[in-house]
Every structure is written in C-alpha cells, then in structure tokens.
Amino acid sequence: MKSAIRLTRTDKIFHALVDTCLVFFFLILIIPIWSTITLSFRPNDFIGSALDGMFLPPWKWSTAAYRALLGHKAFLTSTFNSFRIFIEGVACALFLTVPLAYGLSIKTLPGRKILYGLVIVPYLFNPGLIPNYLLVTKLGLVDKLAAVFLPGAISVYNTLIMKSFFEGIPDELKESARIDGASELTVLMRIIMPLSKPILLTIGLYYGVHFWNDFFNAMLYINNNSLQPLPILLRNILLSSGMNEYVEVNAFGEAPIAAIKAASVFLAAIPMLAAYPFIQKYFVKGTMLGSVKG
Image 1: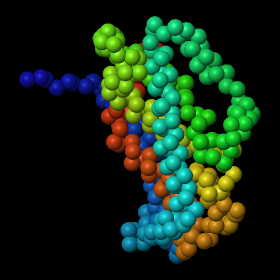
Image 2: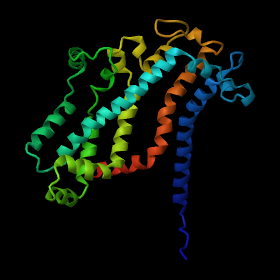
Image 3: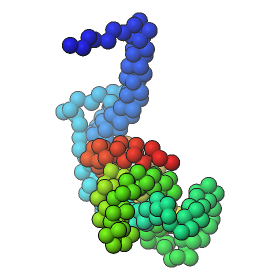
Image 4: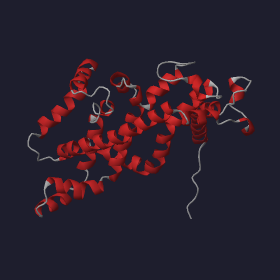
C-alpha cells in the first residue's frame, strides 16, 4: 500500500497561494460573463444599480431581448453570413494549408528550402494593409464574403504546426505505400489524413475562431448591408443608442437597449462555446504533438 505524500509547511503555503490565485482568476473570468448574461435577461421595468442586476431573481428575468434579436431580420441575416464565412473559410483554409504543410514535411522534396523561405519571409515581413487592400480590390472580392476569409486562408503559424505534426508520423508508413506504387496524393489522402484528425480539428478550430470573430476585413471589404457578418452588426448595436443606417435598435421592441446589447454579445459567443467541448480532447493532443518538433 502506498503511503500518502507528506507535505511540508512550505508546500502547504505554496498550494494555498496557487489555489487562491486560481480562484481569483476564475472570478475575473466569470464575473463579466455572468454580468453579461444577467444583463441580457433584464426586464424593461428593472430599477436598480448594475450590481443589483447581477443577482436578479429568476422570476424577474425576461427573454424579451432574445426574442427581439431572434425575430429581427438583420440579426438572422448577419448570423447566416457568419456561418457561411465560418464553413467556407475553414474548408478553404484546410484545403490550402494541408497540401502546403505536407509538402514542407517531405524532406526529399526538390526546392524544399526555397519553398520554406517563400513561406517564412511574408510571415516575418508583413506587406501591410495597403497591398492587401489593393490585391482584394483587383481580384474583385469587394462585397463578397470570400473577402473576409480568403486573404487569411493560409496562416504560416498554423502551417508550421501542421508540418511538425506530419513530420512526426513514421516515415515507414509513407515509404511502404510509395513502394506499393502509391502517389503522394494517395499517401496524403489514405495514410496521412486518417492519422491527422487531432491536428485537423485543432487547426480547423484556430481558423474557425478567427473567421467567426473577424471584424476588420469585413469592415474594409463588405459594404452591402445584406452581406454584413455578425461582428459588424454587434459593433453597430454596441455603438448605437437609437437608429443608424445599419440597425434600428429601437425596433427591437420592449426589451431595454442594454439587454439587447448584452444578449447580442452572448448569442454571438454561443457557437464557439458549443463547439469547443466536442473537440477539446483533440485540441490538446493536436497542439502538443504539433509543437514537439520544430
């Protein structure tokens, strides 16, 4: 029978400090979230301070803000546009990142060092906003959803993580397939891809969170109100106290404006919060395996 480890007085003090810090950081994270949630359920006739609103009794909560948002055409259209950007962006990004990362992971690839340099140099020396804007306009992507995800469809950081993961797959598996006459595309699709589920989901999550929250590209390239994604609508709601050219806050009905703002923030965060638990086990594994080799 194993004996319990006896902690010294210094160990107990250290553990107490760690627990205290963890509780402190937890409160820092949870208080703004809880405050946003309670504010989103605040009724129109609520009277009290902001601190009182954090502890509303359940029978005083109102879903008017959520009913107003989910029944408003602008919110539904923006959410649909964001889902399109999310799905099409992740698919496009993985479609481009996987072959690039696999090519860089092949040590016998002719011109591998030159290709590696072409990937690293733009990462170290970013051309800036004006060249990117000129490129997007010349390609005719203005007022198209592709303008939001196509400029960032390949992330050098994500490519290097995926490359390291591919290099960790035993070469014997690849060589045996090549000896049997398999092409590099067959090796990638039949051997590499089935073994790369953790890194694919991890990198897909990275891309998905980026595209879902991307505000800057949408603000630059999307001028059509019917194509505005959710981050742009949230920005307009949060900055509005009445009506502007993008959203009529007063048209949301009986819900108070503060509750509408809080509800819009919470609804926008739900998809990413709901997706993470399903891929959490792959997320940690993919990140660790992809970062072991440099």
